[in-house]
Amino acid sequence: MLEVKPIAKISVAGSPDPLIINAGVSESISDENTKYSLVTNVDNMKIVASIDNPMPTGTKLMVKLSSSKASSAGLVDLSNALTPLDVVRGIGRGSDVDQSISYTFAANDGVDDIAAQSRMVTLTLTN
Image 1 (cartoon, one colour):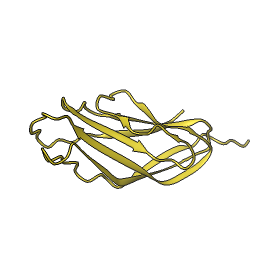
Image 2: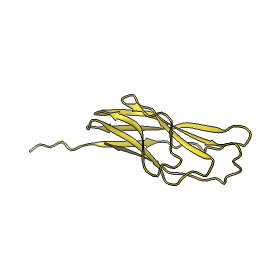
Image 3: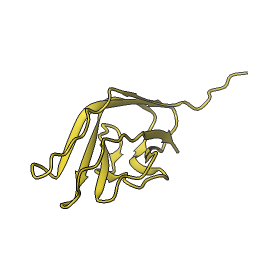
Image 4: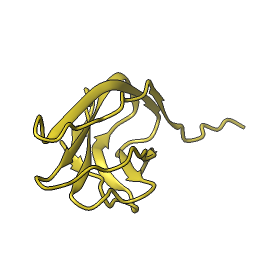
């Protein structure tokens, strides 16, 4: 008997630098120090992203994943994404290696000092 089981693996390398906005200097900051790679033998896969806790009022955390083999959803607002949102769609069989992940942190005018915080972004390769 021969059998091929579904394979769907994603890995992330690197971490974004701290995203710090200095009041009066900028309203957003981005980081592209993180990469992802994936491999799958299943057609029509997608990558979804979620965040572990909502962002503070007046701030946003957005993510953009590039892809050489599928369609990126562009800049996706994860600020309140406790339920996963699509960030890459239409992934077919094969691999996609060393693709960039861009994180953007933005704050509205009038947002006062916010103590340093961290958020966990979860990426999942699914169908």
